[in-house]
Image 1: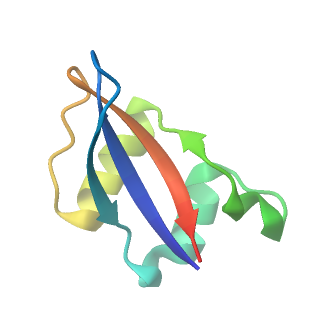
Image 2 (image 1 turned 180 degrees about the horizontal axis):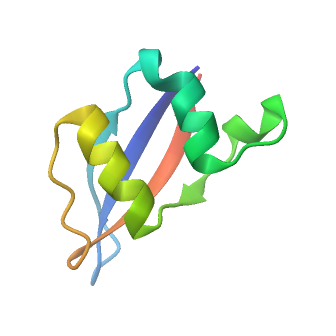
Length: 76
């Protein structure tokens, strides 16, 4: 399974971009998201500002929270 950050326009809610989270960060991602069970990783999650900051470090992408909405998704 691969995890991605999906970015949506904050006003129109239209899809803008998808950024892959490196598979090497899977354990750290589970900790960041506070997943308690293996199946927790398959759901869609809204991302908080502190989570976005960590994901910026892992992906090397600047995530501008004031104009976009962000979700974490899992794609098989």
